[in-house]
Amino acid sequence: MYFIDTNLFIYQLDTQAPDKSSIANRIIRTGIATGNACISFQVVQECLNTILRKAEITLSREQAETYLDVTLTPLLRVYPSITLYKRALEIQARYQFGFYDSLIIAAALEAGCKTLYSEDLQAGQRIEQLTVQNPFME
Image (cartoon, rainbow, N blue to C red; front, side):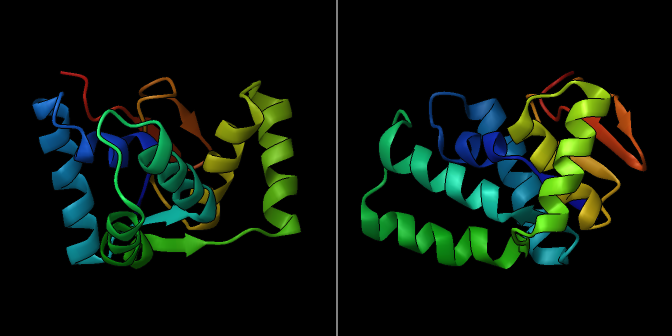
């Protein structure tokens, strides 16, 4: 099981970075097809906010809803809870990550993931059973 951070979804839609788009698309599509990938509510929120407002090519509300239905919803496994927030606070205190990065890590751990695909954290870093991988590094 692997966890996909928000930046991969943004790259999947970014035509300005075709190499990253291709890699992100493969990881996301494979995760949906095999059922071996997941995301949290936070990834959904960040992704929708970005594609509606900040992306190089923004999506319409209808396109965003289709993306939500077809891509994000099949991967959504981790929802907010007090336990999740407390674990994120523990991770933040122990590893000195920002809170939102800690929340992503806590969600990946809660889902039982072994790999976290992210461009935002140190590649190769281990947090409990989770290893951070930057899929865009050669």
